Image (cartoon, rainbow, N blue to C red; front, side, top):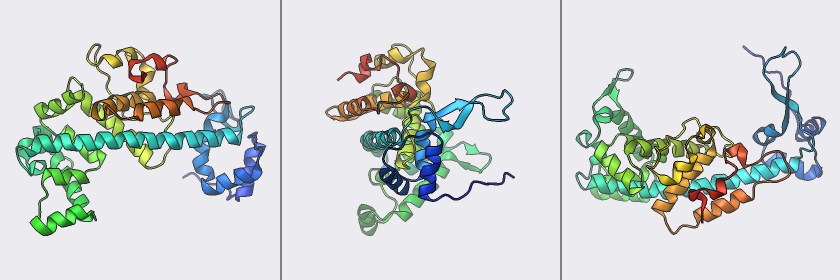
Length: 323
């Protein structure tokens, strides 16, 4: 097992170490304050791309890696500007996700609630792979696993509307009440478990040609939502769950992105998806304008750019990014 040998450093020692590695600090007091409020480790994610690339001692021709030393002209001010940019970006993303999540809750509960007030607990109204196919490792269906998570959410809930309903009617909660407790991940998983016709009907409402495309987009949005909700670095994050792109002509606004493999691996594609969803779910929202204004404020003065987020050079001309 690797022996951890890095010493504990005071805030003053942390700042001194950054200076010895070439990071320009013009205001020691302000930099110390940032280290005390934000933390060395969190900020390190934002100075990482400013570190030099090269071979460290003993690599013997191995692939290049980030060195401890910073690239020339790298400054603490650039690091902080990038941190603040990312913080505001996360808030914008969460704003969009909230609009989408609320609208989708209504879509699911309205569609299925018309057939059974307790449709979320009724396997007959869900896809067979979700509601009847047993997972060998657990001996349960995905629906049963989902229901266990849902019941835990209900039991932990402190919401007044849940307490009021339980006192007046008992349990179970009807789907139009229950859905208000579903986190985005639960909502996305339940959507995957819906019958094809039902899932396709909801996808069509958002201008998508099929449930597979909708399902893929919800997974990617959920990944980005979790990053933002946990206050993690977002701006140049690699997407673990890359969204499926529509075939040519299926969603014309996305045609310009086809044939560009790099587009699908960075935040740019998810921001495009959020733009599409928000315009469908909340057409009068100022969110698209606010997002573009924020992106235009990307910190200048370093070697970094929106290209590190997957943005192509002509992104402003794309239909999705037009006012």
